[in-house]
Length: 68
Image: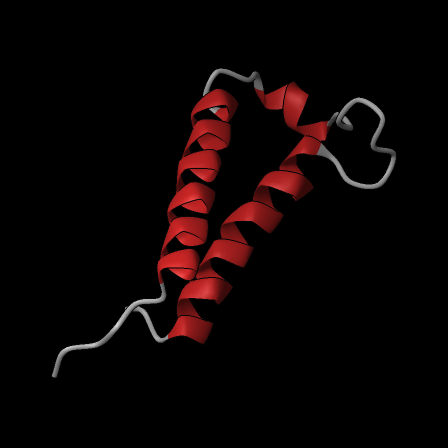
């Protein structure tokens, strides 16, 4: 069964994956202590909490869209 992919949704998800990969790559260079810091100008949430949000959100999008 062939499915049709909305081009706008496809572009959005590809961009989100690209952006998330860039963030995760940047996080690899941080020291463990850096994960307890807050992002500049963002008093709510540590670097670790923001990274966790990105990963969990991507997983939720996959779930909601029926991806494996």
